[in-house]
Length: 164
Ligand SMILES: [Zn+2]
Image (cartoon, rainbow, N blue to C red; front, side, top):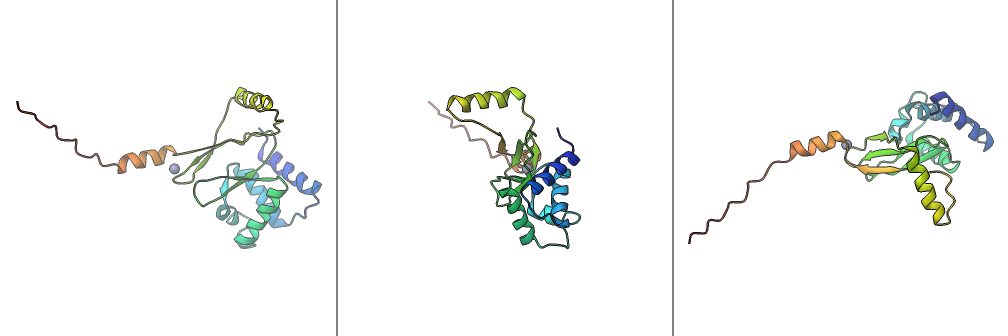
């Protein structure tokens, strides 16, 4: 796994190859995403050091879309309205667990054989896979516990006595 610094250097090199102007704020966004490593919301990125107070969230969003078009940043889906952003570093573990209730995202480690089996299945369909990113949507442990705690057991149905 690449270090945060290696991820940042990769992102800067892609910007350079794409002849993208790297302002201090754009650099701060990439630095933050390389450090945080899990998908984060636009609000979190807008509040990052070097970004907060320098650009409004609309400008940050446009920058993220620019990075996305250059394949530097990946948009991670959510069943909620929020969108999550993370660096799109090739060869990295880019699999995430996404809670549909609270929006928490965490890294999902998959065995190497999973990727090779999926690649083989794709190849069997005549497809040439270049990258695999998985998103598993569901409920995080805390949200499951909160649901259980909120659940009030209903009364058991009354057994009907049949007198003969
Ligand atoms: Zn949750």
